[in-house]
Image (cartoon, rainbow, N blue to C red; front, side, top):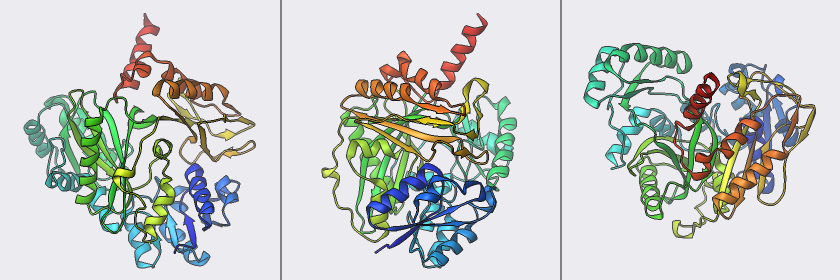
Length: 454
């Protein structure tokens, strides 16, 4: 049994995990930086430990400090949330060596799937469709150009390690390749400390579809349907929904079975996400597997009624899944919107500051995941996301209208936010028709820029 969980994260996901533990009768320990002394997660946990100054490297990314806080507090397990150390195989390995339960997959699986090239090879061997690309890491632009010619332009150059849109460039032609390869490689080295790259065919205007996976240590693997995450800017998701309006029941079943096969091929245990790119012709390709809980997990919880955080904890405690694939039922439609403290009209400049007034929507079918409160000072050191609003309704059209109503109620005074920008997306005719892909935001911004100059 897990009696006490240290939450190695901050913000709304730390609050989310603490609340789930509380409902399960599990004690919690929060860790916080000096900048987060007044943060909500530090106030809600049963115990709270300061682990250093504001800088991430000196606090939330300090493995030694977090392990020490776990041992000193007597916690049995660590929940890493998302981001930060959640997909760090070395951190998971440290937990294993110290006899601490890591609420996630084993360190070996994280390492294997965290390397995009190795993950591709694993999936290809299991018969999972993969985008045509290199089979080994590429370090030299000359060698990369040869591979790009074999694969066929346009190509995507990606860092073998890392994520978050860093270390990625598209080359449309041989003339662009060397410059973009070196730019992506330099960025990868700076962001991840690794300059190994891989190259794959670049699919134009796909949708980003991800399947939520749960797997226990007894070999049982199920999927909980898909999420459509095509509304994104600079590879950062903005609006997510479930189920995807692009999938037929037949295609949903096929992709779900593929996702389960992918998880089994990796020997996966706990919650994870198999991510695909879906072409307009119905072809789909494995992109990557996220070995953690996702920001957008609430939409899956809405349509299935399954609490993913609680399932993570149960699996980590050695329990079997309490349901089979046939017992998973998808009901209705859910949409999530990310609220960021930023100024869209100034190239989405982050806007930290003190929240001087706050009203967040409520009512049937509306969920708020947030760690802000009136008087809270949003620190300038961390991610700009300050809240997630998710809604559920019987149909997609009803869910869009409910979200529009919810966003219309939002009052966050003292800082700028992207609420109005997100509302504009919901009102867009193409979004309402479900006619979107991962280029939706870029195309929309280009149209707006042309309109201003005409």
